[in-house]
Length: 310
Ligand code: ASP
Image (cartoon, rainbow, N blue to C red; front, side, top):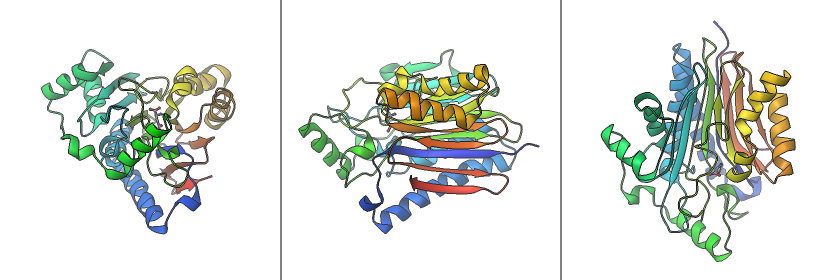
């Protein structure tokens, strides 16, 4: 039996202690701890890494604090378009969806694409039609509406910016893309990521979160990675897969590979953000070049940590 571990993130950005109230901070800690527990409970029962990452991400998608599922940010036309992906390191099977509307749990839909379709990646109307055929839960527009998010959009529109969720206003940063990676008791790895994208993004824009290799990657031979940050540079850097390549072809450790990608390669192309990773020995790493990243991990050796700032 090998060490099992789950790590999660709730987004990266300009998150500072001074923009927090004790109540807000407590709500974030609770949400992150609940998601860690949801995944860990599955691993503890000798469950699959794949089921653990899905459970942790669903927990975060259902929480309005994070920019995924219920808490998804607004596009420039005032809609919510969500991206998500999931990958099983055991056999490299993967499922992704992009620009989907009204889906309660986009990660569940990505999982269903992986399990029940001939394809890896479905987008927009086609993905929604597939969701209907497979009994995936939908929610009305009101479910995704929140006043503070709408304010975020109006503010971002005024300055004509496209903003990372946590970086809309230095004094008012609330949400983030979510993700989870896990190594189960059998040394299987899995990763999942889910997001509403960036505030004021052009409708139809797809970020890194749904792109296998960019925002999400898992391979039992190397690592499982889930990213968060400014999606365009993460796509250009093929960030998640690059860590796997550095491990496979150059013999890097997980942490060394993640540091190279996040602190060197991404920074060079203005790629603000971070990533979480696990390897097949159950080691976890959480690396970011932004001011903060909502994050946590929990290992069967008793190590547990949940943090927000640097
Ligand atoms: N990476 C996401 C995107 O670009 C945003 C985020 O991580 O907050 O869509």
